[in-house]
Image (tube, rainbow, N blue to C red):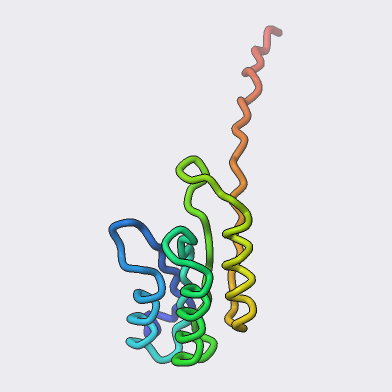
Length: 120
């Protein structure tokens, strides 16, 4: 990836994929300059202390080449109590590791206006 000129690689987390922080560690260990961003590490898969400690370990090992993105998953699939999201975000921010924040905003689909028929 570095030889191709990429500066940052974003990795996701799904039920059947690698755990986000472990996957990031593998990628960081295989590169010299590439920034790796976990986007999005699911807050239901780890508690606040685990998220903070894992992100802190990656920051110590690889400098500022790691960005932790936290999220709740897709809104129709999970309920999102803000207390859990807030606790994890606070714990990780206290660790000093850069945290990415992405808010889910549902798209509002608008119907296109009816095609006008020119009757001239």
